[in-house]
Picture 1: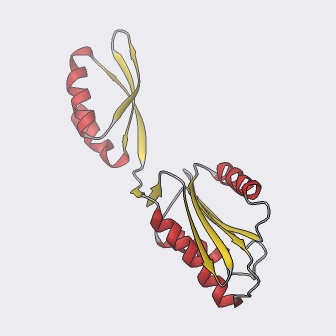
Picture 2 (picture 1 turned 135 degrees about the vertical axis):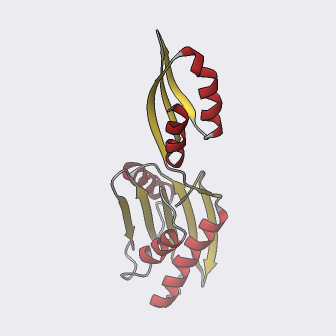
Picture 3 (picture 1 turned 60 degrees about the vertical axis):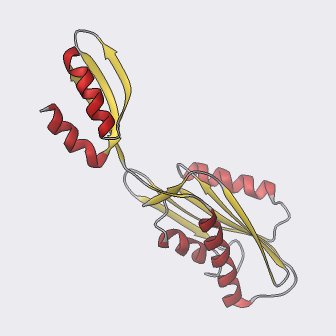
Length: 186
């Protein structure tokens, strides 16, 4: 799985129609819907704002796409296929169309929306997604220095630490490294 860190926009003209592709990182479905409302406000005179998003939650993937008044399957689905093909998560891709007076036909629309999605995805910096996990630990003071060194080697970080008779930690690290941390502590 992969994700993007920042918003990107591209623009293309096809047979006098203007296509604006936008890719936006989103944390959840509410943020995706808020971004869509903002796009509608930013482009109030657009003919269509087709979109697709793919969001990973703890339990499931939330995947949605919408043709925005274009013939069924010609806008949202081609956008979504590019998201799925790149295995992107927590991302919204919208393609804003200003109709230029020349009809593109179903095949032309599918290509235009798909190409806009493809180009905006290619313009973004794509980063591998690393699933993180949080672990609570209690250690004695003499173990602290070695623990911090091992945690750093495992790409982890301390989120919280409470000092009393012993030290209580809340740490976050890649889920794949959790077993190695437990082996170190054993």
